[in-house]
Image 1 (cartoon, rainbow, N blue to C red):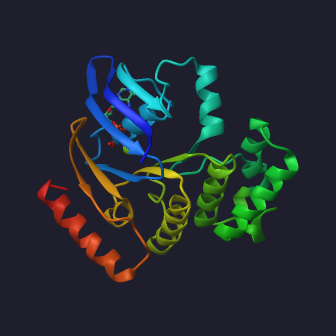
Image 2: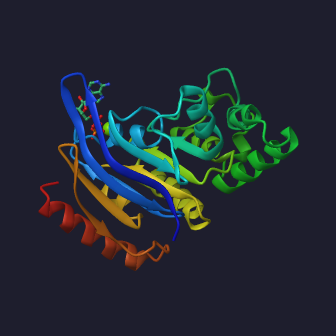
Image 3: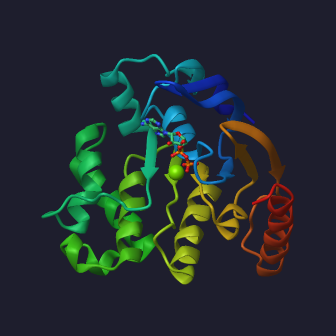
Length: 250
Ligand SMILES: Nc1ncnc2c1ncn2[C@@H]1O[C@H](COP(=O)(O)OP(=O)(O)O)[C@@H](O)[C@H]1O
Ligand SMILES: [Mg+2]
């Protein structure tokens, strides 16, 4: 498997505090990784520093073999727009725009394909995530689950090779969490690599690999089989992960 993201000796310091130390890991194309750890262990900081939203104070991040940690802001935002997708706990959609307009906007901005093509992609994504019926609604008129699905559609509009997610289900109830994770697993099964930060073992159990952070260092990791939607296997991988987390005081 080819490596899409290679993180080497990454460190991050905020003024006097070393938040991340000597982080090393590789992500293969199409891999699904969950990052777990106590609150304050550095999960979000790690995600921001490997996705070019922030810059590490030491070490390297290679994306598709190319060093991105030292690119200027303009080049970095272009890579983020065209080659990466991002979702967060709250999807930060623009007010006064419809769901559809929010989704197509980064597609139009990227300018790599025609507007017609972007509109078609948006329709396909909204059908797949079950929000086509609210496409023309104002973002204030839809549910939290619908907003989060819209956030996913927006993140996928430029067909990224990698999707970064920081606690994407943190504000959702358990049934909506399941729906959102089913979508993310499907996207991953089609070849998009996923890196998700979560404190929810049920969410992390959908990944191929769980990386456990402790005090800004990778403590260790657990490998799981590729998720295939089988309910019984899902239950046993959740049990295995919960036991593993418990051993680490989580
Ligand atoms: N911009 C910042 N400036 C100073 N300290 C920060 C900043 N961002 C995060 N930190 C510190 O880094 C540590 C890890 O934070 P974070 O990555 O948000 O943890 P997590 O996502 O695991 O809860 C915390 O102690 C936090 O206070
Ligand atoms: Mg966080």
